[in-house]
Image (tube, rainbow, N blue to C red):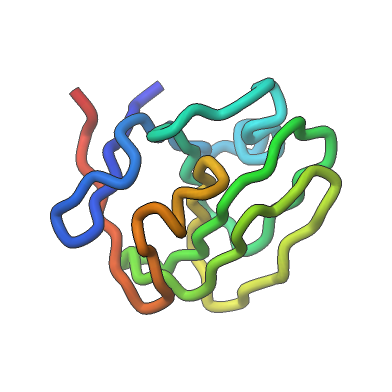
Length: 117
């Protein structure tokens, strides 16, 4: 699987982000994981809403436009929940819970993706 780094104003906010673009990968998402480590995440596209049914941990969710603008943020989405439907969203970035606060991520920021080493 291709891995990306996610940058915000030149700062790496996640260093190992996988991409889920097929129906199956989008459906499964992070469900197979028992935890997510700092710097890890999953980019799901196309996507404008997520669920955390059968997950074992909280996640921060960034709802992004095609250009990487953050349209909406759902912090600490716990297991068994459904996020809001963000209609103008094209892709969703799932990160370890607490990343949004730790990195000072805000709606209106723009993230960029770079191939991870």
